[in-house]
Image (cartoon, rainbow, N blue to C red):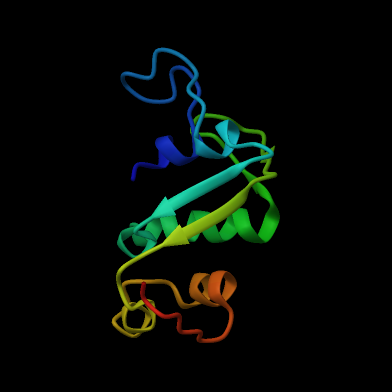
Length: 108
């Protein structure tokens, strides 16, 4: 999932960015974002997501001012995130922030 898809971008911020584009957080303001397969999210994007969760703000690509977030985030994965954390593929701090202590749920 590209950064620009999640956070949006300003016109001229990179080659091909001919107009402003809203990202998921802007589109889902006062609503919900569903992040499917969060276990496959790039490590760098995990860091940005953690910052959003901690500060309640994000910066569009090419912008200089932060924007407020008022969005509920629901995520899912078919991976064992504890194992992904142990393997270094998923951020431990994001895991703890999103899921708190280890919880297991029944599969339907």
